[in-house]
Image: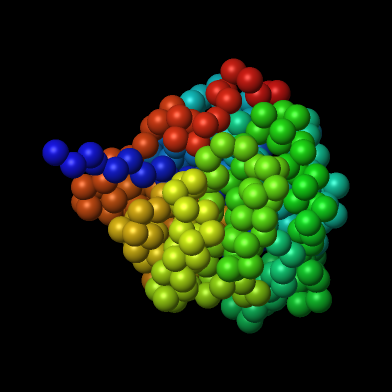
Length: 310
């Protein structure tokens, strides 16, 4: 009898891509972010990917003081794997982006695998009414900023991970990022089974066409062999279609309001939990099982929630 494949769902509950003015459902303060993470976990997300914001004005923040109440509340109410960003926002310095992972030593953290243009400025054509002055400024700044992730930067994050026994969600926005990951892996700078998150549909990275998805999968297989777990993330309208296609090709999936504000064409998602429930239903209809947090920990070789710094 064939073994039923278990799929890990990651929920990215908030982030720097979207600003508070773009949706009334985007969590902005610590309580809202924590509640969104708990709701996503209850809906079936084994992993919750976390950014945070300054509660004063909703500005993206990597201040550990802004993460602390979120981590405390979420870890006290769910056993989900908490995945802290090292990406932050493209306009932040590298040292600023690394602060929460240095302090909290999570089981899992994100790691972007290459410098790139990261174009959010087209959103200014779709959104014109903003609550805060910083929102259009941050979007416009991406017209003339390189999202820095140099080889030295990547090595620094990997060193922090080795010191703290933190594993990584390797975010690959283009084919070159897979080559960068293979380079680090061949040098022995990564540990254990790789968790590769292929990202589609961000301006400056690979597109969201099904051919792009297949190209990523073929290249990852050629470079990494069987030594990785694959997950896919489709930005915006690509979220649900690519998640289903990716799952049928052997991937895990990531959804959440960080990546897309929508649940249907022209219909805003009312919560991260709603997006998790939708993809969970689709996966279960395809006869996949949804991995629990402990099953995700086993698949990814994580150190366990009792060994974090929060």
